[in-house]
Each structure stands twice: as C-alpha cells, then as structure tokens.
Image (cartoon, rainbow, N blue to C red):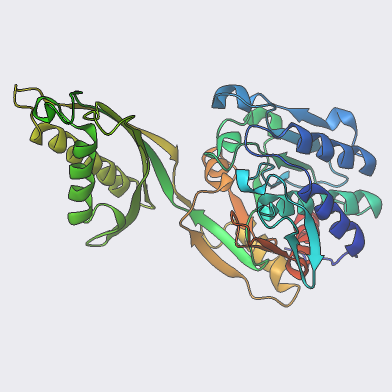
Amino acid sequence: MTTPAHWPLHERDALELVLALLRIPGRSREEGRIQTAIRAVLQEAGVPESCISNDAAHQQSGGGEVGNLIVKLPGTRRGPRRLMMAHVDTVPICVGADPVIDGDVIRSRNKTSGLGGDDRAGVAVCLTVIRELLRQNIPYPPLTLFFPVQEEIGLYGARYVSVNKLGRPAFGFNWDGSEPETVCIGATGDYAIEIEIHGHASHAGVHPELGVNATAIASLAIADLVQNGWHGLIRKGRHAGTSNVGVIRGGEATNVVTPHLSLRAEARSHDPVFRKKIVEAYRKAFDKAAKALKSEDGKRGRVEFSADLKYESFKMAVDAVPVRIAQAAIRSFGLTPDVCIGNGGLDANWMFAHGVPTVTLGCGQHAIHTVDETLRIADYLQACRIGMVLATAG
C-alpha cells in the first residue's frame, strides 16, 4: 500500500457546505429537498448529470419522496472501485434546525430543534471530497458516492438499494459517527417484533369479569420477560444481547376492558442464534400470558406475533482491505485508529450483506437525536481530510 498523500483542503468551503446542508429539512421519507441540493453541489463541482441517478428503494420500503441518490464516477486512474457513503435523512426533531457556529462547534440556534449533523456532516464529507478531487485535478480510482434514504427508520435505503447501480465497488467507507479516528468494522443485528393482543371487551364497571384485558396480558408478558432476564441488557452465560418493548398502543376509555393492544419491540445481538432465542422468549412470554387469563364465562385472549430481521450483524477482519486503508489514512495524520464494533445498526450492515465490506468512520457528531446535538468543527474538517486520502490512497 502506498503512503497516502495529504492534499490541501479548502476549509471555509467545507464549513459553508455543511452549514448549508444542515439548514435543509429532510426527515425520513421526505428527502427530496436535500437530494436536490446535493445534485446542485455535484453539478457545480463538474460531475456530469449522466453520472447521477436515483433508484426505487422508496417504493420497496413503503413510500417516500425519492429513492437513493447514486453517483458513479469512472475515475482518472486504474484501481478497484471504492464506495463513499452517508445517509441523507434526519430524525424528526431536527426539522427546523438553524445552524450557527458557536466557538469550536456548530449547534442549532433553534433551542427546540436538533442539529441534524447525523448525518448531514457525513454527506458534506463525501461532497467535499469529490469537490476537492475535481477542483485540484487529483487522480482518483473509480468512485461511487452513495446517499441512502430512510436510514433513521430502519436502514431501508441501504437495504433496498439497486446494487447493480453501484458499479460493483470492492469496498466502502461510510461516514456516520463522532471521532474521526473511529474505525467501526462491525455492528449488531436486530429483529423488529410486532405483537397484536386480542382480548375481549366488557364494561369495566358493570361486568369486568366478562372481559379479557389486553393490557393485562401485555403486563404479565413484560413482567415475565423482565423477571427472567430477557428484557433490557441480556446476559445468558457467554451470550449477550438487548431487547426493548418500545411502543404500546391501545385503549380508548377507562370504563371498557381493553380489547386490543399493539406493541412494537426489538431484539439485538451480535450472535444470530442467540438473537433468535431472545425473539422466541418474547413469543413464549406473550403466549403464556394470553393463556393465563380467562373471563368468567371461559373466554381467553390471543396473540399475533411476528418478527422481521431489520439487519444482520457483521464483523470484518482487522486485516481486511478497507480496514487497513482506513487505519493507514488515520495514522497518516498522527491519530491512533480506534477499531470498534457497534451495538447499533448501520447502513454498513446492509452493505456488507450486499457484498461491499464497508468501514464506518466519524465526522464530528455529538449528542445526536437531541436538542443538544453539536458538530465539532475540527473533527468534521479532519474527517474531510481523511476522506480525501481514502478516496485516493493506493
């Protein structure tokens, strides 16, 4: 591997770009405006319109304004195609962001809004890199820029990407994190669990004994999971994972025995077999709870249970090509790479499943998904410099 070259970075332009992107709302399924802005930046930089396309990922995910934005560049020198990516959507709390520089960070002047550095900072890194390569006539191998939609609601853009449009990259780099020296080489897997509890309604004051309360069934099941160590942080011998009941909906009046309840939960683990055991523990707990309750006239409730794999876990070898390139690039700036495995889902989970081993790197985000979110300017600019090396290093 050749020693990375450090090309100059126009810091003011990089900073103005991320500020401009942060101002544009773009919650999941509403990414049309931010994609229009990205296209404008690319075309102004000299990227031909013929290199820019969208796929139909949003049609497979259940709707949305646009699919993924993909930019496929032929390169100016030979080498394996590499992918650079960052998701374009933000969480709802970031709608209304008013970015302002405050000392060494960027934050939202609107105190009720998050900033959206997750992941507009990553998008800005990718755009800054390609803008600098073209501006300075820096030689680069074939590159694919990938801007997925709907990451925040289930990694749907990466999951349903039209892989053939990516141009068969050999490996990739994904910007979606905090410290620029981070090298995330793996992440956990996650099942989405949907539970529908069907009880029986009755008047809660006149004849509660004739009803079967769906809320009571849910309460028994959740208590069972907690008491037996299958909710929250889960440790069973050498195996570990997490689970959570995050959404409960049902009931319309206090004088009616609740006839129906909908729950959404999740089960995570790096171990696919153990993750399925967590899901099965949920299934058994809710079935057991439904059988435990019976009305005075013999009626019981029932449970509909489904579990969908949101994304599979993955782990790359520390000597895999993109990991070695990422570490060399970080070291070239005098930093020590922090190789880690994440407990949250990343677009990289699906890229690995699609055959594109992808390292996830940091770009200055902190306190994401909150009104206290900030983007550390020095880290963001360092991520841009590292990105230029990753786009060009042999």
